[in-house]
Each structure stands twice: as structure tokens, then as C-alpha cells.
Length: 263
Image (tube, rainbow, N blue to C red; front, side, top):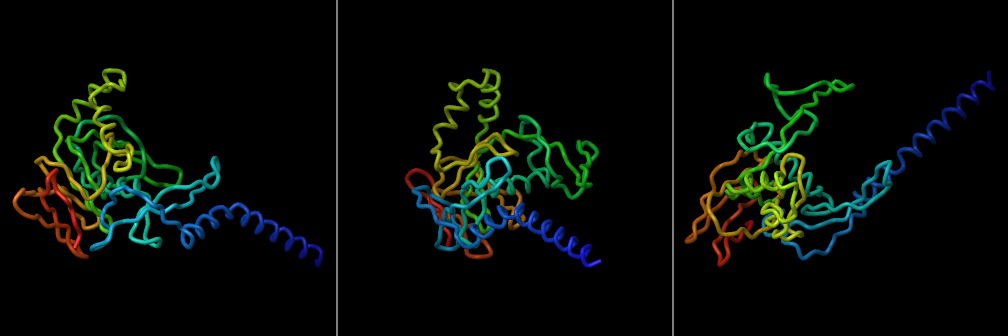
């Protein structure tokens, strides 16, 4: 019996060591990201993260079986409150999809992921995965807007009407994804350090920062304060305010558009 007991202990220890060895990369990444996230110097105009304080970039670690440990960028008000910028944007547009607020925008493809809906509708294409989760086939959109992340914590996104964008994207597709299309020329005119690449929800790039261009047809929304797109009246002879739980966003007219401050 003693030999059997010892064998069980040995097998148990070996199994525990095997599990620890498999989990070690995740543990290492969690420790590095929690205690040793390094701030990245940047000349990008980052969104506001608190009254009087803009977001900072941080270098985080990520791990997967194919690539091992790699570096990824995150932003936040501090090293303890940080998030991948693409995740910030994807959560914002998942909020719009949850409320079916993008249904009127032209379709540009489909993709599958977990359900964001409180309740499925008869026309929703979906199935259950092996774990019983609802997987929905969503429509990727081309929005007739430009989008600007002006704040995180909470996330606030400002939208500017750009009715030509769906037609430009359709032209781009019909021309065999030509690099000389108006869609690509417009995309490449946006400073790379001030935009995020394509999201799962949109073909549009999402811009960020505290400077907005001239123009009309403005709206704003926020997933963190449960605000769907609503009109934003920007006047050239006064300031416009969006109240937040911590402070407010103020839009001040300038020579080239509007400057956003958080007070």
C-alpha cells in the first residue's frame, strides 16, 4: 500500500508540474502586465482619460501557442487601468450592435462571434457552439461617418457625417481593391499614429485624439454611460459640453476645427 500511495503522490506531483509548465507563460504575462508595464513615449495626440489628464501608452505582453510572448500596446490613465485601443473601439461598436443602431449602414461582409444581444430576433443567423454559447453571424458595415475617440474612462466617440464614404468603399471593391481609389487615398491621408486599423464591426478606420476637423453633422455616443448616438451641436462662436461622471468634455472652436478638453 505504501508503494501505491507513493506512486499516486509522484503522479500527482508530475501532473501538477505539467499544469504549472503549461500555465507558466500566462502567469508570466499576467505578472509583467500588472507590475512591470512600461510607458511608451509618443507624439500621438491621445484621448482624455481623466479631467486634465490624457491617456498614456503602455507596452504589454501577450502570449499564444504560435508566437509565444510578444509585445502589444495599450492605453489608459495609469498602468493599472489599461486596455488595447482596438478592444476599446470594438466594445464601443459592439454596444451599437447590441442596440441594432448600425442596421441602416451599408453591409461589407460578415463575421461570427459571441452574441451581444439581450434577445435574438427571427432574422438573426446563429448557432450554439460546443459549450452552449450562442454564436451570431454579424454584418460588417461601412458607416457614413468618421469616428473620433476623444475620451476613455469613460469611452466617448464623436461621429462626423461623411455620406460619401460608403460609395467610395463600393468603388474601391469594384475596382479590385485599387490602391488608387478614393477610399484608399482618403484612408492614407489620415495620420497613421492617429487612427486604428479595421475593426471587426467596421471597414471604416477609427481615429482618436483631441482635435476635430471642421464640418457639420456631428453626433456622439458612449458605451460606458449607455448613451446611443445623439446630436452634438458644435458652434463656431461658443463651447459645447458633454457632462461625464468625472468632469466634462468641452468642445472649443479653433482655426482648423474644434479642440476638445476634459475639465
